[in-house]
Length: 195
Image (tube, rainbow, N blue to C red; front, top):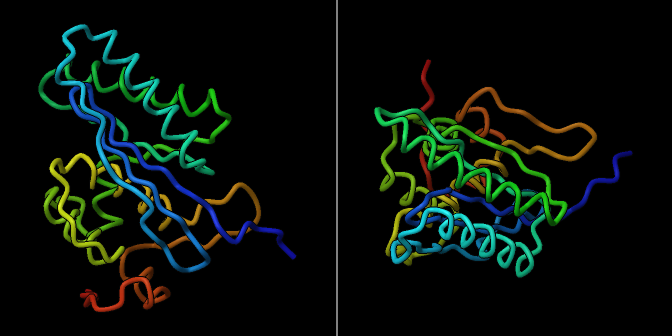
């Protein structure tokens, strides 16, 4: 018989050098509850190294406050500007280092994987992801920055993967199979099953 933890706290981070989004959820068996979401702003800082220091310090404060069992983080994606990719990679690395400094395990997800796990489409907009999270976690507040719901989406994506530190876990081949097995999590939503 597996000795799995019945509850776990998952922190998700959407790294950025201007605004870093985060979300924290509590997973209790098949239910997921919103604990917190928000942003860390760095727009007032000009020095890129001070921004990295702030990311590290604020991530450690969030970890100490919410005591997550795992940190899920969005991977940087390649765009047209390699400098942007480099800055995002540094921001991600600093957040990962903060988690590792507190012995928190880290899992990375691509932006497409996160969107697909939340909405069923890897091409969903930030607004569509935010709307789906509001339904899934039953909250009405719209954050000032969509970076907050992006961070929350990373945490929920991790929860949907059912990654555990050991033992057997359920994996899903797609959104439809997840919905089929988790009707209480997606109550009120209609799943379109492609045949």
